[in-house]
Image 1 (cartoon, rainbow, N blue to C red):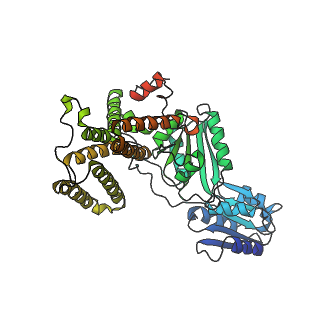
Image 2 (spheres, rainbow, N blue to C red):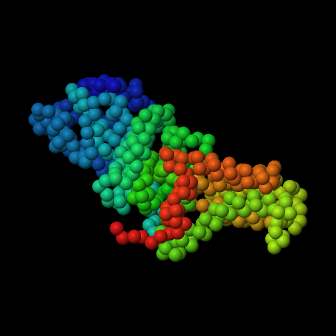
Image 3 (tube, one colour):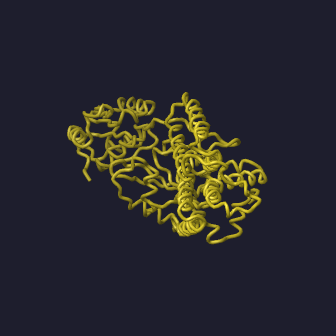
Length: 467
């Protein structure tokens, strides 16, 4: 660690050599005169908050030399710097780290310490409702890209003195703030200790994509088909999981918060179920379950019956294509699946005024005309559309992508091996899901291992109990 030099010229020389002072247009080194002492204020212009810095400069410019004696820094710290958050820093590298995070540093000649003040004001958007977790009833605020704001949104709802929120610095170059939060007495102490140790010992060069890269670093399940954590952008959802004993991880610059541990059934929960009566909430939950089930198995089962109509009972003989298309059914499914993914990506990248036109093009060209020219049979379009609706009804985006990959695997298994292929592939996927235990929690819990009481809470939205 480099000590802070006593000379302002040495301080400026160090900043020019190590921080790029003079080459960065937004880096400010403001010389000052404080009670006959040379001083300097160092900050980034984009982070500086004028309403805080201006009163500080006005106050310092009026300080007389005799008012600072006998200990200059102590007098400034306790009396003349009107900042709420202020601290002594003795290492130059730590000063740079805090300034790059948005703080301002005050150097005083002949002093080996700097005063670091929290004067930051990050560029941020308003806490709007997240587009992928909307509800009919409920709050309309969501997380933003600022860590402090996100933590404040949770603390506004969860005023529990046992709530702990500790911060870690991750990434040698990005140096991102990561906050681990839980409620003492509710969270698993072993899980908390494991995560704290992992965050302290995590060594990575950079973390520009924040939470997703951090998830891969923490879980190690980088090639797993199943998601290891759940993400949410709603403060009320995070509060509910904290009260259930979960641990959450905030990452600065990300509007998504990680929830862990998370099972398969956690990915199927949605706040809308709890904004209605238990009966209506249970109905909505089962509609969602049916949609997820259809997104997984509707296409493979229909494909199996279309290839092997002898497996159908007489009452279901109407299932299957009435006419043949120009392409094999498997190719039609693959083209349709890829087409839906292309439309989804196009919808993300298409400007809002053109989104309606893009939807019309997709509906007319890919749907109607493709059937008329014989590229697709009508049943393929129908069942692919139902499966796509079930995919979009899945609350967790990560789980919906995993279900799409499972659907494709089942289609290939049916095409290659028929009914035995479907059964064997389902068994293999079930075993893999049962063995998947991120952070020590079985992914299929409470189904595997079986817990009837917890499973009932998943199948039925029970009324809230008085405590």
